[in-house]
Length: 83
Image (cartoon, rainbow, N blue to C red; front, side):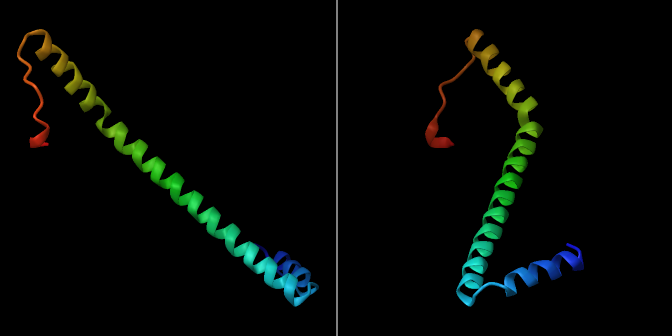
């Protein structure tokens, strides 16, 4: 933000009453916190997408192998206790 813009914002804030300034500060804090949370959520989503893209071909290959083994009668029931 340019110095002129900062100076303008400061003048606007200074023209408010103390109570209004306090309300504005609380609003800005909440607004900035929400923006940071949204950015963190977007970063998490991108990270999941990247991780999935890295493993997608392996998942497809594992699914094809499982289907092939089932068709050939070589599949064994999954033991959930060993997971």
